[in-house]
View 1 (cartoon, one colour):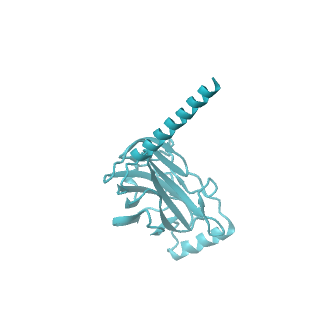
View 2 (cartoon, rainbow, N blue to C red; view 1 turned 60 degrees about the vertical axis):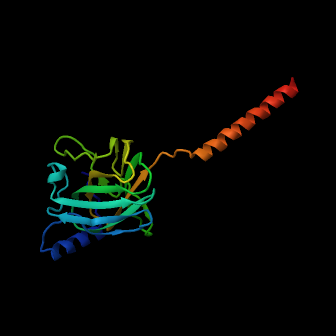
View 3 (spheres, helix red, strand yellow; view 1 turned 90 degrees about the vertical axis):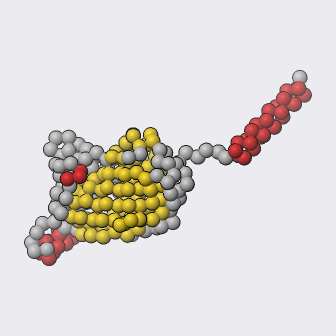
Length: 234
């Protein structure tokens, strides 16, 4: 989709990478991964499988499942929070489109009411910041014509808000101890040495019975005070 701007540094790097690869022109490709924080969950099963069968295939015109560049993830949330998976990228000369397929398990003890998928990058100081339009890393947003990017899918939610840097799923529920599959595509460009895929569920907080009792007692007491004041004023 969007083409990255290339500075002199990136052109030199891309040229060197092409020479090392035997002169082949490669798009930005994913070379590895790392779970940054396991406090809210873990990778499970076979963790993550990465296959790059046809680099530099931006504007891939087949269906998402036909894409030769695939990332398969299995993960489990043990609490409500976010999981960050960092993907390292080989800089080169182009944009590679990856099709992601995830199996996500809810082991948090609470039903989920929505699910967020976000792209983050590292700035020049090494700080993790949200991805923007200027880094050219983005979710494919499903245009028409010659670039029919695959629309994300969800096995648990119906409503999709699909942006270049964030996907939000709503109108549904993923109950505790259940799993769901999510799919989406990402354009991986030159100039991004690493990016982070951040995912986080949300829940609707229901007040506990004890809290409701305290609230009711407080309201009743307030009503009594107001009645006494009216009587004294009358």
